[in-house]
Amino acid sequence: MDRLKLIISLIAFSAVLLSCSKEERDDELPEIIMSEAGHFPQNCDTLYIGESFTFRARFTDNVELGSYSIDIHHNFDHHSHSTEMADCPMDPKKTPVNPFLFIEQYDIPERKREYDAMQVISIPADVDYGDYHLMVRLTDKTGWQAIRGISIKIMENPF
Image (cartoon, rainbow, N blue to C red; front, side):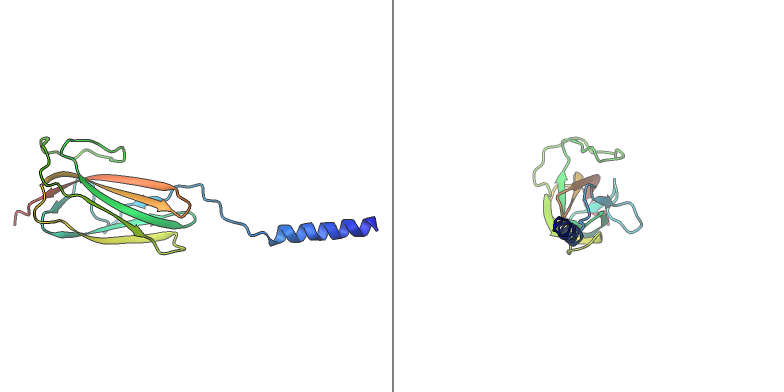
């Protein structure tokens, strides 16, 4: 009888182990790729007042992507973000009067490990020209976050 109990216990234990699904562990940050052909804008690019541009980047994650946000804000005081790779020529410091501010969040379709982001962003005709930052924050499904910041200029179109 003891042998029968041992066999039944082993079978039950094995069934429990086999029925548990293996979840993929997510211990990696998602990745923001903005340097491939067609990605825009790049560090030190110029955008124009009263015009639209198309933001393009590629996002990847080892398990599943979640959402991303785009933040464009003035840099008239010459602050910096640690993700910037190269310094761009800057205008003199100035006090903002009507700076452009854009902050939007976008969901990524479920079960995506790769996603090509594309957003049309309009710059109003009445904003201050000058130095700006464009920040991208990418969050995966489990909450890991990557941040990428670049310097851009917003200017009046000379044409």
